[in-house]
Length: 321
Image 1 (cartoon, rainbow, N blue to C red):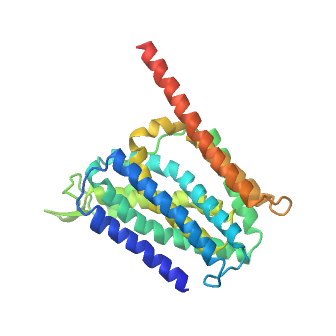
Image 2: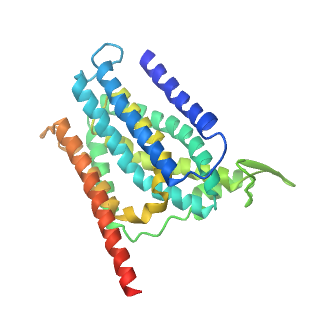
């Protein structure tokens, strides 16, 4: 319990420093600043994998699966990479939401900051019930595995699906019935006073839509990490570190999203892999180093291929002009 409390306090210290010190004044986050913070969050995550090794060498944390320190560390890193890679789709949707509600780049960080607080709570609840379900009902592993495989197949064959429009979503319509929605923004405020009373600004609407979409994406990502381990602390900590790095990763990729449009095939491969791993866990035991290697290699190949295809497409357009 002490470890859990310490970890949660540490996360809130990080968040307090983020908004209260480093980003106290709203500003447009440049690609250079975003790349610096992306590197910092990645480094912190890798350093925490060392903490995982130390914790699982002691009795400070509950270890229901009797994991060895080295195995626990690899599971953390593998889970972190899975969550980070599955966040790519989330980044595309966040960009779409910001564009739809015309959120200024100056205030996007504020929306994402408060979105992370909600994501921590919702992910924590989903992880808690997911772990509980797997420990109580062994068949839940097959359920999660089948769902991940179904999701991968669906992603593969629904490329031309109608584009998501935040303003036509059920979330937007329901929110409009609860509170008046203003089309005007007032600096970084989520609510403004109008003649009819308080009204939600586009910043607040974007925040709520992003929160709901995060829950939707968590339906895929939480079962995916449960395929790696059902140890609650490793699942939660790797998930949270991936979420903390999501903001800087978003601003880092915001101007380059088109270059990574083919990375979705890597995500399909990862979902298929972890889905099959869950379905076949009674027949085939995949070593931790093999899982980590497959996921890391799949991501690297996806990035390289996406950049190459993007470069070729850009070259073709220049030739036609």
